[in-house]
Length: 196
Image 1 (tube, rainbow, N blue to C red):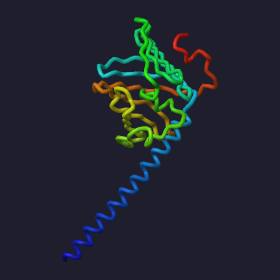
Image 2 (cartoon, helix red, strand yellow; image 1 turned 30 degrees about the horizontal axis):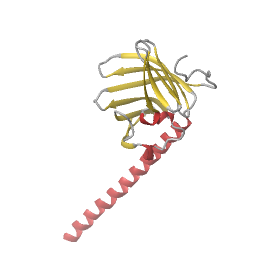
Image 3 (cartoon, rainbow, N blue to C red; image 1 turned 90 degrees about the vertical axis):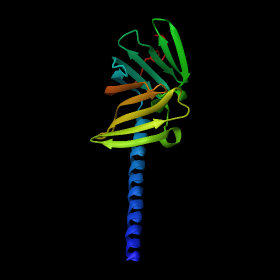
Image 4 (tube, rainbow, N blue to C red; image 1 turned 30 degrees about the vertical axis):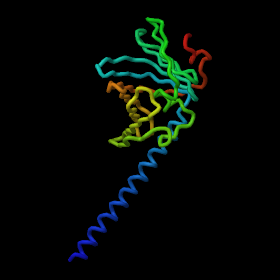
């Protein structure tokens, strides 16, 4: 009887290990697909809706070109103009005429702006979840300045970035939903300059 119980216990452990290995393999496959998608995501524009923790909703448009180039314009001018010039990410308050800057590597935009991203190497993968036709991957990183986590949201079929959710060190949440990503053949030379 004891031997029979031992075999049952061993079988449960054995199949649990196999199941975990299968799940790990599936996770690695999903991560690789996400990396491939992000590394090909270049020269694009998209309208977006941003919702802050206080419920404030703002609209804008972003432009992205790798490596390291980004422009985020909000419809309302009281919001900052955000420009990444290849090295620095600048926040330009047009009302106060003030600029705050951080190196791109310390900003959450680094995920999208790095020429070739390796999610396991460049960040810590906190969670990877699949629900309905969406995949959610939550990342953190010691080098990210004042950022606790970044959750990327993907549509699965076809694999498409739909937005992200950022939680900063003060537990303030910012959610961005991309409305439609468009491929851009060529940007104007002043698109990624701080002041047009």
